[in-house]
Length: 265
Length: 273
Ligand SMILES: Nc1ncnc2c1ncn2[C@@H]1O[C@H](COP(=O)(O)OP(=O)(O)O)[C@@H](O)[C@H]1O
Ligand SMILES: [Mg+2]
Image 1 (cartoon, rainbow over the protein chains, first blue to last red):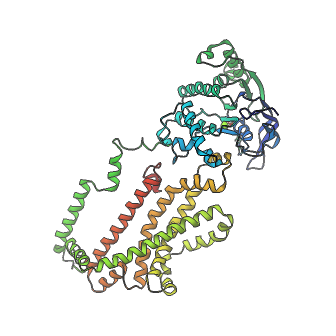
Image 2 (image 1 turned 180 degrees about the vertical axis):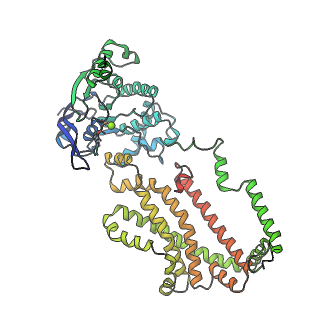
Image 3 (image 1 turned 135 degrees about the horizontal axis):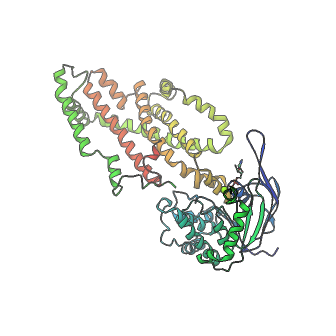
């Protein structure tokens, strides 16, 4: 494998997952998902809620074992959580008794890595996510958007080659969300990693990605892959680009948005 | 996200603390009025002083007791017994709680026993303690520890199991060891619960020490109550009750202050459940 530490390859082949229900039946959450991500590629996965997006991300993260298929990361099969991966969850999941800086440093503490170089890195990350000056604030003193930025810095502190994000801005208001999207592309432009980001927001999925994978309703499958092909760095104006709007229309069609309404005529 | 600031009344936050810690002017006025009424109305009612003393009787009994030095000695003895018992209960309760939560075999073997002992009224064991451990201070320390142990234990167990699912997942994704998860996640998450347990345990330790002294002792505030009761010195008994109440209040205030320091991210009242 030629993947560098700064960007890992991801490969999923025929990955399926079913859950045992309490009544004895099984629920197929994912079926036969194939996914390839090149080093430093930004992939978004968009799909209706309940289609198995979080399940897919947890499988990638090694937090859930698939019922079938294989998961490769940087040429190795994934058998559990890995330290070359950073994860951002839907909610910030900050420890309320730790300051922003202490939260960002948590992976370093758990990994027993030397503190001094990591502290210098943390200072850079606070700068990168625009939180310089808030290092000593506790989570309850920060807004939702700021908390999620702390969570992003925490996911990056140990310099993982891969970043996995599960609807990281899903809980934020539309305006904050848009600002976070712009910021995330800026962060990624500064230090490109392999990113898989889950979202249910179509515009967000196109704005951030090199490739958008569109998932069907349960059992989740990838029904189409869209090469975004828009220039980087991206500005908000890209959203009025005809290629952008064409992608939006295509994904809306694939997800069946608006068809119920037009079908009535 | 929980925001502890918005649900507090307007102001610098200090007001809230004042209201919890100190009586306001109007509260003082009401209690003063009640004491004056008690002082004035009681002699008119014809109830004899050895049944219910007036506040001034109690006050002078307090002064007499302290100047003669007899209360000081008994106070010292009881404080020693209850604080030793409290300390043993606090450390023992937290340690046992952590072992029960973390080590499956300890839970299997000891949990049923602990539940059985917990449903027993512990003060019924006081005569046995006297017989097993003796007439001295240690049997009272044991009683205090025994009674105070369970609220700490139960709250520690509940607290250690209360940590949030997402946070557990975060620690799993970091491949944290069990000891790391305990130290960096479960224990801090449990502190508000443990503080609430210590708050109850403090009063329980006092209860244990006093009951131990009732059953058999040569000194201590519980012993003093028995002696004064025997001499029909009801103002003296009331004076001791005042001292006991003050000990309880001081402990409560100290533990609340500790809670504000070690569980500062919680609003002060959220830690009370
Ligand atoms: N641990 C689990 N046990 C049982 N069912 C689950 C579990 N996790 C997810 N599911 C089910 O799998 C489906 C997909 O869930 P999820 O991956 O969270 O969807 P999404 O993130 O796309 O909204 C849902 O129907 C959900 O109820
Ligand atoms: Mg989800």
